[in-house]
Length: 112
Image 1 (cartoon, rainbow, N blue to C red):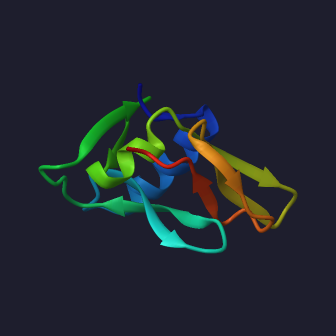
Image 2 (image 1 turned 180 degrees about the vertical axis):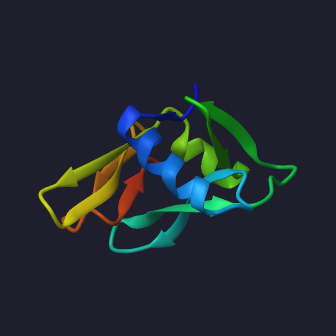
Image 3 (image 1 turned 90 degrees about the vertical axis):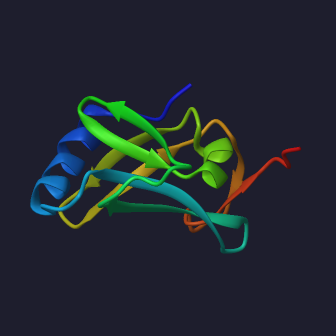
């Protein structure tokens, strides 16, 4: 499996990475947060760690740490623009069990 970016996400993230001269790609991760348990983290990254898994999606390097990989593997990231003022990354994750009403927090099945 892998992590995929839609063409819209590739175009948007490509502009961000181009402006951040030291970045080598996009890091996607999970952190404990919110009412459902976890929240997505997306940030530019300037180095790749030994325990990272690296994906290429249409020329964008996507980096995922080993602790987050189980939850993120198979996910698609889209960039959505609603009207003039609302834009966001949207995470389409087949591993998510549920998300809260605010859309910021997700829950996952227990893994063993």
